[in-house]
Image (cartoon, rainbow, N blue to C red; front, side, top):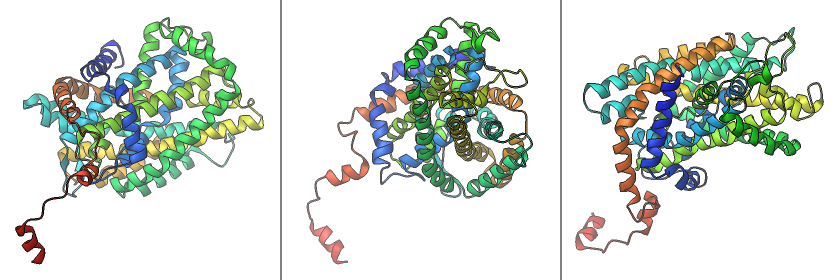
Length: 478
């Protein structure tokens, strides 16, 4: 699934959008961050969530175990060079995410409950005429529901269990079954409340979890600062040579390095999967381009900041190629945990225990946020063709799957999720290629306005007061 064709389509889509939009992800990144984090929202537009809540929902769904376990798996299999190709998915992915969000807002509709509903399952059929658009939209919806149980749920829960293995003794009363039960109860308590409940929890949880985890990464890097320049050099050089992954335990050809970098990069930031359109469509805005600028910052925060922090910690601490007590290769979240332990004093020390705790808390919060965020994505795919009739059964099954993921083989879950991700990306990427002119025209029209920086409330406030007329005076008397 993640062979050369799909990688080429993802890269080509991102590159075409980057060129067509004149590198908007670089030119307007600052404004998008300001609008989301400083201004936080706008008044007067239709929608269920503010800009900040919509960004938080998107971050909750994407900043998951891929940022911890996914990076560990990518570097263990593809070597340090895999991180470089994750960066590539991040930079071109920002343009893809911008396009997905713009189309999500432009073609959104209102469902039976009065909530905004948008995403590829709607913009593919509405923007591309005829059976082609309808077919792509239907395929995306089917694969989107399937992927929600994998990338958005089971893999997240499974990585929490894996992360706790290093903290909980083998003979402890705390078992994977109990982990799954706790996750299941917490997820059910949130998602049964719908999108506003999910948005409220995400907006409160996301800042804490990202700041907490990144602070831990910065502490490790500060204690190993002399190794950072060499780590960057190794990442870049092995990106184009393949290098010896996992410390010589397995060879890593260049193609494998690129392949695993793209697969885990997309797993982390979801660029190309179409999920950017879901959260954006729920935002309270009157302008698709404005929300698109906010949405593309999610990929920057996810990949360029959080993924980079994890990757650097693994490389500078020199844990790549480590084996466990059974002689097996340490990979995924276990590799990230070992890197934190080594970077803060070594396994068995007080600092090492603190490092393991940072990873465990990061995994738990990232995974929980992703699970609740992806439940909303799966709902929107299902709602497109079944209405609201199956939403409650979907939520119940979704909650149960979070338990099953906690007690299932992690290797199996990663494999199934990679397949579901690829199937989900294909119809969306094909549709984005066809809808590129729409994205370009909307963007050009918006930035051609001299007052494009003004939000609706500011534009109204700056407008001249109307001249009183006799009709207005009579209306006031009435």
